Image (cartoon, rainbow, N blue to C red; front, side, top):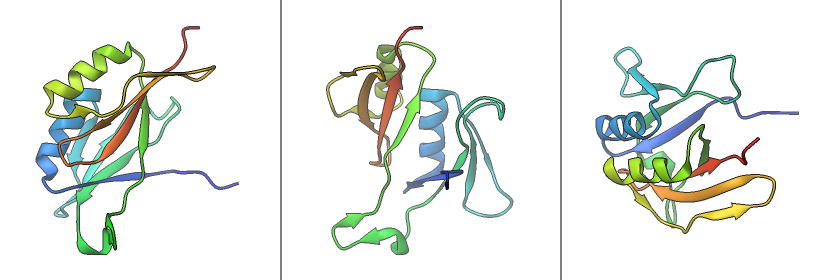
Amino acid sequence: MSRVVHFEILAENLKRAAKFYTDVFGWKIEGWGEERYLLVTTGPNKKPGINGAIMPRIKPFTGKKGFLAAILTVQIDGKLQTYLIRVKRAGGKQITPVQSIPDIGTHAYCRDTEGNVFGILQPPAK
């Protein structure tokens, strides 16, 4: 079986996107050599999850109806409302109501400073 091992977030402004994700989730984001490509560390390698990158939004990544995208969902350790406040303070926007998903948790979709949609998931209390 194949697994997702890396993600890439497309951005018009790499610094602005890096600041947004650092402010909201506390991710470590750093340059990769001389490339316009920022490596994103989302947490310790011993915990579930993947790391990725932020890269420029360029023509090969556009489709007939606009930009191609995948929706990333970030599982958080705290309260969903706390993260929704962080999203707004960092310049993003909550775009769906908070919804409860049985046996999965509480979830909402947001938009970052670059126009990308992502989800935030608070798992159920143990």
